[in-house]
Image 1 (cartoon, rainbow, N blue to C red):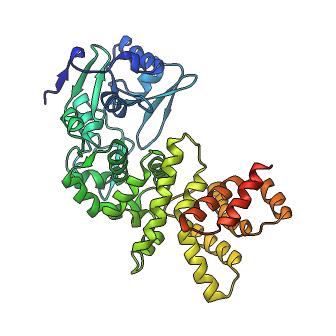
Image 2: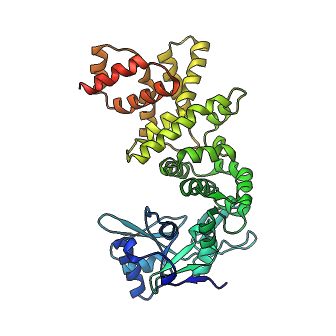
Image 3: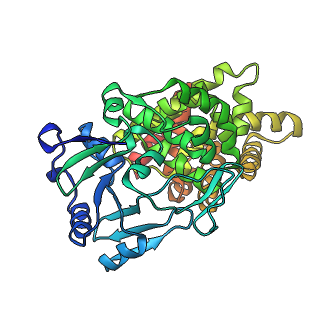
Length: 403
């Protein structure tokens, strides 16, 4: 396949927009005799006039060869063998051009190179050509290359067309690609939301059919990808897409079942407000603790479970809320939330009833607690969202100002 080559005068990417660290890696590989391309999201974002979050490099050098070129390099990963080149304030990820996965009935001959089970790719270190590498990437808009040798853009998959038309299109068969790696489903949702693009029709249908495969994905990978969803600046749009394409229930089954209950329609109000608040914090540049983000998402569900526990087991509200929070957190095995984060979620939630006690002694004790700020931000959000505890909220605002 002959790629579409866009020469430097006919596109908008300039080396001035590329980080000094990325340029050092690109030129280092080129001067060592290797192909060196800026790849993926960095090229996409530069063409869209956005500031890339990071710059990735693709090359025909193997990871071991990359390490020989750069002393400040470390090889990582087993599923995907990569080179990381470290600079003072930036790390450049370098991947070797990869070949497509072999057919299911073909033995690649080396489990250390490629391994799959039931269509899910467990290891993929088959190296190939730039064309093969482009065709095995997930979406057309992420498969563009910028060639440092002549500053051209190389496009094997009509990615520039889809950028112009604002479409997220899977490269190859969406059914197969989502089976190989179900996390691509979440990446499709994130890119569509963050870029304000539409997901192409066949990919949308495949997402609905294969969303349940997320349940078999590594829990640590799911946690990492959910963090990206929450920090993309368009979490509210991501949530809408998750509900529209039946993905949410496979990430959070308890919440999904709760939302799909006969009275679930009104329950989305809290979650819509939660994701909108997360986006406001992101836009303001606030570095919000992951525990607070999860507390917002789980909050009303925990309150609902607490009400059931209080009614059925005769516990007081504070005790019931503590029990509801801990029961749910113990069930969160699909997403491997770190223990420190789950402990902090519990502190935020179990601290909520204490905000209803407006005494100087309680305030003194609460203000000293390490979880006070996150617990208070949750209380403030909940009070305003549910239209409750206005007097208590104003009192606590005054206590914070007079510290």
